[in-house]
Amino acid sequence: MKDKQLSVSAIKAGTVIDHIPASVLFNVVSILKLDKLDTMITIGNSLGSDKLGKKGIIKLSKVFFADNEINKIALVAPCAKLNIIREYEVVEKKVVEIPDEIIGIVKCVNPKCITNNEEVTTKFEVVSKTEIKLKCHYCEKITNQNNIEII
Amino acid sequence: MKNKHLVSITDFSKEEYLRILELAAEFEKNPRQDILKGYVISTLFFEPSTRTRLSFETAINGLGGRVIGFSDSGATSASKGETLHDTIKMVSNYADLIVMRHPLEGSAKLASEVSSVPIVNAGDGANQHPTQTLLDMYSILKTQGTLENLKIFMVGDLKYGRTVHSLLQAMSKFNTTFYFISPDELKMPDTYKLYLDQLGLKYHEGKNLTEFLTEADIIYMTRVQQERFTDPIEYERVKNAYILRRSMLEGCKKDMKVLHPLPRVNEIHTDVDDSPHAYYFQQARNGVYARMGILSSILGVK
Image 1 (spheres, rainbow over the protein chains, first blue to last red):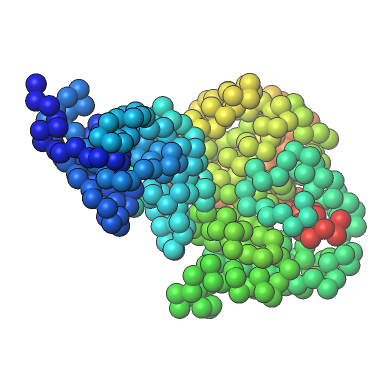
Image 2 (image 1 turned 30 degrees about the horizontal axis):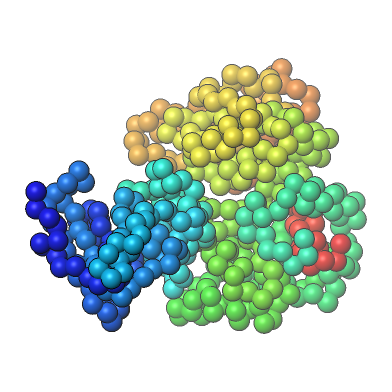
């Protein structure tokens, strides 16, 4: 079995986000605004397969996330795993959890919602986590898992 | 309730509803008082609505207040592309309270976040119309003597009808038993039925208008619209099955009332109009008193 370390090099300190389904990798980049970050980022996609099918991985050097920051990715990658690295060692492993509120990341599914017609930051209450259901703070309609569109 | 916004029917508690209904009854006895003298209230109707707007304007004028506003955004700078955000910010400099109706859902919520004065939602797209619900509740209370333990029949378009959804949310606080009568295409959505399940409230669902009708304390009629049907043949098949006729009301409880948010098209046959059960026109008049109650409690004058 190939060690994934052969495909992507190790980092000294930072965060590794693993088990990202390949299809949502760039959504994760969007959600975390990684394109705006200055530090060293390695993004690997369609790396080998495991139970999830093709997966992606993001390694961020010298970047550590607060829980409420990283939990946003649970919307698209609920099984993502985090490895916190210090001195080349994994010092902590975490899983992501869907937060209770989502601000500014998801588009409301209702075309007649004010957020789709004027400059308004979207805001949702997560009313179901097992099968993701987001209730729009403005129009009160539910955006389902399969309708989630990352802004 | 002073300075609170009324955007959604869920914004107010059961006690707050009851307080507004108490005030509505006082205003019905005494509909000309000067308690809003000196107040300037804005009615911003971004889409037309003669009945609701006139009802609010009557409520305001009847209590000595003055109205500024518009009844059609075509004549305003909204047609130049001014955002709702900017319009509300501007008008909250002029008026003590804003009543608004807008075609987009969530518009009233946004307004409440931007405005420095209270917002009363007079209808945001297909979402909420809380003042209609309050006048419906006032009508129910007046005719039944209580809001508790009633059997309320909701008929017609239960899928898209904002008035029935809102009435359900409000009346669910009073141990109501609901009866949902609609074509299959327009059934009450699951979210509302689950909500009732969580509260332990019983409800019945059926397609047949005449079944169980003698049990009703209130029959709330709504229109079945052709546009809502994906299959036009299905519409043709059911369109006449939800028309209430006088003959169907035989054997109904003496105080049972038929309500309708209006405008009525053909879903209540005109032969019902002079039956003692018909209440839909008085219901519209109750709108003035309910709105007087809402405005005076939000402005803190009562």
